[in-house]
Image (cartoon, rainbow, N blue to C red):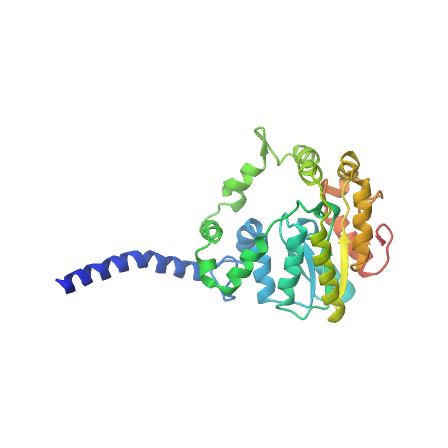
Length: 324
C-alpha cells in the first residue's frame, strides 16, 4: 500500500516538474537577455527587437556584466542615441551606453555602483537633468536586477522574462514584428483613441502630461545629493573621470520649468552638480533648444544633435554646450 502511494506521489511530482523543466530548457536555449552568456537561437536583431526594447534596464545591465568596459555612459533614454562609434573614432576608447527607459536619478546612481562591481571604471558620464532632480522622482528597479544577478531562479521565473521569451520565439519563427504584437506598448501610446505614432500628438502629450508629472510636485532631493557626493568620492579615490551631462530640451518643454515656478530650483540644481564633477550643459536657451527639428519629441534630440554633442564633448571643443 505504501509503495503504491509512493508511486502515485512520484508520478504526480513528475507531472508537476516536467513543465518546469521544459520551461527551463526553452529559456536556456532562447535566453533573450543573454543571462547565461552563451550562444542562443536568437539573432542580435531579434534580441534588440524584444529584450532590449521591452526591458532595456535588464538587457543593458546583463550585457555590461558579461562585456564590461572601463568607459561607460549611464542614463535614461535621452543618452541612448549618443554614437559610441564616433566616440571611439575621437577618443580611441570603447564606451558602453548603460541606459534604462524612464530611469530615475536614484536608479542612475544605482547603475553606477552596479557597473563598478564588474569593471575597473576609468571614464563615467552620467545623464543628469533637472527633471530627474526631484525627491518625488523615484523608482527601485535596479535592485530587482541585482537580485537576478545573484539568483538565476529569480531570472528563470520572472514574469517579464517569460513574456519577452514568448515574444522572442514568435518573432524568431515568424515574420511578425514584435512592436506590432506588443499590445502593452501600443496601449501606452494611445490617448483618447489617437495613436502616439502621430508625432504632434506625442509632442503635445509630453508638454501637457509628462511635464506636469515631473514638475507639478517638487521637493529638493537631499538624499540624492548625498548619494552623488558618494559617487564623487569613489571616483576621486579610484582616479575615475566623472562627467555629468545635462542634455537639451526643446524650449517648449523648458518653458514648463518657468510655468511651474521652478527657475530658482533649476539654478540651484546646476550649482549643486558643479560640485560633483565636470558638468557639460546643453539645457539652456541656445540654437538646439530653439530648434524643433532637432528633436524627435520635446525631450529627445535626434541623431544629428547627438552626434554634434559627442563631437563637442570628446573633442573638448564647446561651441553650443558649455562647461559649468
